[in-house]
Amino acid sequence: MRGSSAGDRTFSLIGAGAAVLTATVGRDSPQAIAGLITGIGFIGGGVVFQGSEGMVKGITTAASVFTVACIGVVAGSGRLFLATLTTALIIVVLELPYVPVIKLLDTRRYQQRTMSDDDPPSGMAPDQ
Image 1 (cartoon, rainbow, N blue to C red):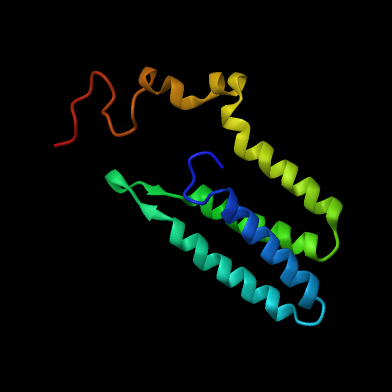
Image 2: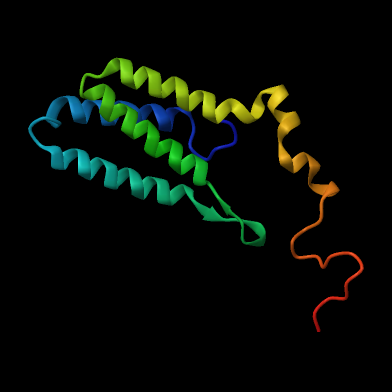
């Protein structure tokens, strides 16, 4: 995915591992799937960090890693149509900001034209 700290190989390994685990032990041991999701949560927590100015980065990457694991579980349980449909939907959601027409609608583009909520209204003195 674009700009993420987890690359294509990471996503492939997580999806394939989740599918294999679910296909082999999913029906016999649902706790294995719960353990898989818990482990993916730790991986996702590892890609989230606090950047400059207190901004949290990596949330989308962590959510993508979690979603790839869930798609792997769905594929491993034999629901290939649902896994394919979910994969297509996730790709559309992740690539939507890069569609040229959508960039025109992005509110961050017009941020300089509006006031911040922190700024006092024009003509009023700030609180003392």
